[in-house]
Length: 61
Image (cartoon, rainbow, N blue to C red; front, side, top):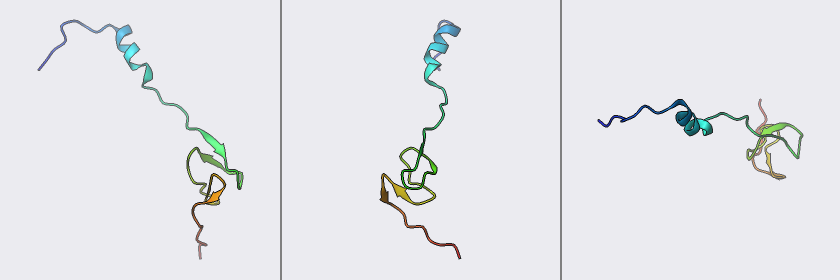
């Protein structure tokens, strides 16, 4: 197994890890019903995506 020849400094390690962070998901408002939805997803309330019907809702009996 390969071993590091020198200790990696905290600064160097942290520079490499700057991109490993969580960010909040982008939430938009549905153009059809006004419900908050995740970006690039079909609306779970009305089934519309980009102003077009993508999924027909089945009425619960």
